[in-house]
Structure formats: structure tokens, C-alpha cells
Length: 460
Figure 1 (cartoon, rainbow, N blue to C red):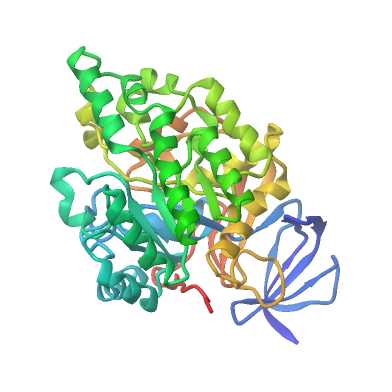
Figure 2 (figure 1 turned 135 degrees about the vertical axis):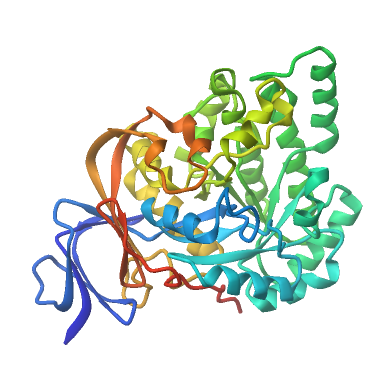
């Protein structure tokens, strides 16, 4: 049999081990994984000699916000950056000028995104107190999960957040009950609004408006309080929940304790919380601002320990595109800068660097960046290097040591990646394959706009 593509010479990294193997691809799926040198005939061949192959990386937390502000990011630039970063599937959050808050809006946004996608994508649905009646319809339209912000939106962006937020715990029970009925996971941005608003007012009144004041306005307890509420409600309702962009070790351990009690509670974190401390806020000001904020050295070490202990299931980027002029609004008052960092192109190198430093193993990278997300979000054809799975491959050079320079980034918001400039990376993406098509190779995006497909969960 002549396969569409044969990948030879590579070493596979999965959560169960590392081994050399050749891969045969037909019709966009893996059809064989054989010992090196097996007689696999392919119409095309990809030589991975000397390189390692991860299951196609899934980024569970992306904000391209398309359609939104195209000069910051559009879906072509965002998914091109993902391809360059070794990411084969992104989970796009519901915020945009067409917010996902109904089945109709989800279908419209899926069509808009699919027209220019270079890699595959899934869409979160929005769950808030304003759109309870629309939650079931979003699940039917193919939402991969639901997202709820437990903070009010910026006053100038109410249109982007309609149906995506809830700050009232009484109403939140109804929101969580409606999501539970869909069988999908319910993901939360956890920060306790009253606590951080009071702290910010006090800091501003004292004239504290730069750098680390942002972190001081949102200490870890702000996150912990909100996580505790979500976990208590999840236990009471039997809901499936996830804490996203977790920065607090205590929050991760609270989720572990909830799992011991039978709660289906999982945790996602992001590379900035593992690699940087709140010192970066003093050094870079608004260009190091994200929510939750960067933490102190003790909390960063604690979060790495949680990663080692298996208390965190997935790692996503929380890619947030902003231009230099957007961020610069916070030069004199950190509270005026929009929160968020761009990061699609550094997720894989940073996680390989974490393995190089011994914080985690290479097998952990496969689990945290590919396999676990596919399992938790019911995407059985993703995140596996096995026959029957989509032929999504992230091919890396573990021997590459280099320093990052955001000037070469493909995201339109490369200025919002300056926190990574000069960071020594151990491991580089060589090629990215999405359903058997090479979409990135040796520094060049080769995938065509529209190759990426909308991915739906396969739920019972």
C-alpha cells in the first residue's frame, strides 16, 4: 500500500514512554506506527532523523478575538503563529466582536475562523447570567467546553463579553447547573472581584500605580477565594470544572483535595507563571501584566512543584494579542494597561526547556500539552500517536539551544512578547503536521489558509 505520507527516523514522545518509530499517514490519519526501517511506502516522505515527535500540541487557551481588532491579530496570523509554535489545535475563547453566547453565534464564528485557519481549532461557548437559555444550543452547535469570567468586563468592551460573565454566586449556581446539563467541562477565570477592587483602590489612593502594584492588588488569595467558591459549587452540583491559568499553588492543591472528594475538577496553568516572577512587572511594567498576575519566587517554585506532582492537567498559553500602544497606556499607571501576554510561538520551546531543567519529564510534556487535553475535552482523534488518530505531529529538535527574539514572531502582537526576549530555550520546533499536511517547516509556514478545521467534541 502506498501511504500519503511516511515520517521516518523520528523518536516518539508519549506519556507512556519514548521510542524510535516510523509513522504512516493516509487520509489525514495515522494508519501505522512501526519499528524503524519498516517497509512503509509513501507518496511523500518526511525525514525526522535526529528529532523527536510529540503528539500534536493542543493549546487549550487562546484569544485571537477574531473577528475583533485585526491589527492586533486575525485568525490567519494567529493560527500561523500557532503552526510556527508546533501547535496543531487551538481552543479559541469566546471573546470577540462576535462573542460566542448562543448556538447561532458559535456557528457563525466557526465559519469565519475556518475560512483562514492554518491549524485545527475548537470553540469555547460562553456561559453567563445573561444567556442561560442559550447554553444548551451552544453545546449542540459544537462547543468544546464553556467559559465563565467571575469578574465584570471592562466598561468599554461590554459587547465582547455579553453572556460570558457572572459575579453573583446565587446566579452562578444556575449558570453551572445549565452547563452541567450539557455534559461539557465548565472553565473559570477565578479572581474574587470585591477583594481585588478594594486592594486596587487602596494602592491607587497611596500613589502606587506602577509595576509590581498590579501583583499587590491581586495576591494569590484573590484567586484562592474564587477557586474555593467554584469548587464548593461544583461539589454540590456535580459539575465538571476547570480552573484556567492557575497561578496559585494553593488553588491547585484545593482542586486536588476536591478530586479526592470525587469532584471532577482539573487545572490549567500557563508558561509565564512557571518562568517569571513579579520582578518582571518592575522591569517591564505593562508588558509583564497578565491576570492573574505574576507571583513571587516562593509561589513560582510551589507551582512548579504542583506540576511535578501531577496536580496540573494541562498547560495553555492564554495568548492575548495587544499592540505596543495598547500596553503603553499603563506606563504611568499599570492599572490602565490591558492584561495579557502573547505566547503561541513559545509554548513548546518553553515546555521543552522546563523538561531540560528537570521541572518535568519529556513524557510529562506530551501529557500536559497534548494527551490530557484531548481526553478532558472529548477529542479522541487528537493528542495521540496511534493508528486511528489524526496525523497531528509536533516535531522538535531537543538539542537546539537558542535565545528568543520576538522580532521574528508571526503574531501581529509580537511587541507583547517582549517578556520572552533573551530567554534561553532548550528545544526548537522543526516541523508541524496537521492531519497529514506539513503546515510549518524549517522556519516557514507552509500550510494554506483554510486547511484548519473546526473540531467538535465527541460526547455521549
